[in-house]
Image (cartoon, rainbow, N blue to C red; front, side, top):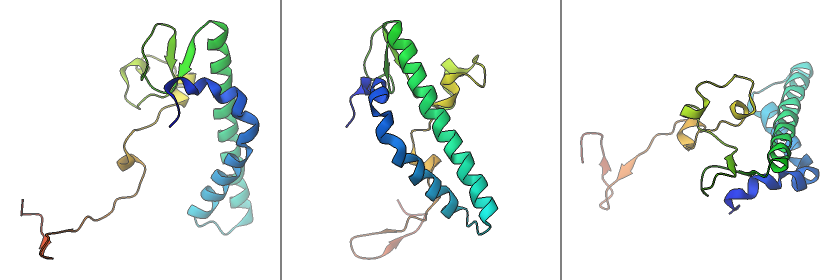
Length: 137
């Protein structure tokens, strides 16, 4: 597991992250069911630009904070006045008055997989093999 203040290590990891763009581009073009090469190229360009923007913004924010003696961490796992978080939940109160294009607004992520994964049916069976319907406890 990455240490809480490991978010600042992005600077040393940037050269090794080129594969990430390819993985995200491949996933985006395949999941949309695109068949037209122009559409695929448009999605590919958009994903590449977004990944590049996020990584550049992350690196610049980390470097700016480092110059001011502040350490970038992922959340608020560690405490201290010289620590700043990278990730925020979408409705975090600290974001309320920020400009929509601020760095903090770029790094919002919900913490529950329910927010990013498709819905699935859950079928519960008792140990005797009988299915539990919605009315049972």
